[in-house]
Image (cartoon, rainbow over all chains, first blue to last red; front, side):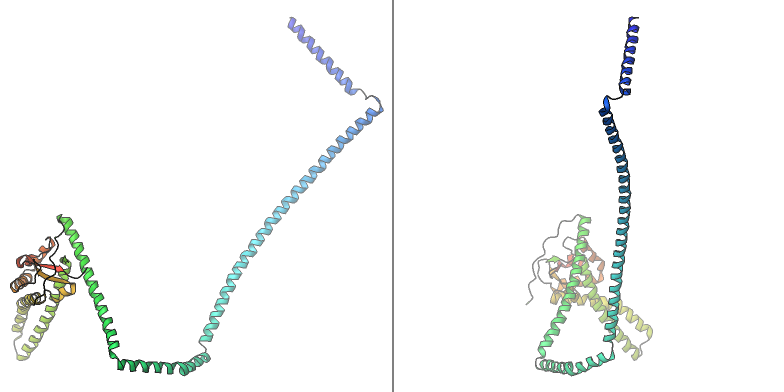
Length: 203
Length: 139
């Protein structure tokens, strides 16, 4: 019972305090100076709100312009890349064209009858006497010293025969080794004893 | 030096056999031509040719091998392969060993396969003649 009475008393006190605060707000400020102060504060608030709106508009505008600029830069880069690609392809094509033109020109020059006549004339004039002189010298040398060419031919022939014989012997030795390995593996044989030395020559 | 084994000896023997067969065939062909010109009947010629190939040619082969072993210690085929026939004590062959070896090799060639299982690669004719085949070329 007592607690209920205490609660009702505190509610009544809170309502009274609210009424006092409302009266204070509704009351006109004291004097003309206080009124102008409120006007100044209101003006400041209005200016602040207006500036916020202006700043918002400016921000949106700047963002739109940035997006537009970004799109433009991407498009520009894409165009530059396309131009570079086309330039590279054009460079390769022109190089091939130049090489083909050069080949055609060289072939035409090399197979031209005029050039052939010039080369034939020069060969006839310069090279043939040299070849004739060298051949005469070589033939004279061979007539004087036939042993030189004979020994050369003989050594060449013996080298070829030796090489063939060595190849046959190597192949046969390899075959022998293979057969020996196989038989020693199958029969579990020990290695063969050392053969006797070189036979004495018959007198 | 090492003992010569199956492959080298087979190649050498085949070369020698080829040489003898070529020479024998040429001789037989020449004999057949001469006999046909002389009017020998064809049956006799055929019999003589078969006899030459079956009897005379192996004997010629044995004689060829024995003479080369006796005189040079190697046949032409063995010389090409770098092989040499020696006695078991390393000395050159004597005439009896050479002829015995040649005859056994030619008329009983299957005995040569014993060299595969022998430690010193001695075939049957090597065992009988107490010989070895060694490789003299450095391979």
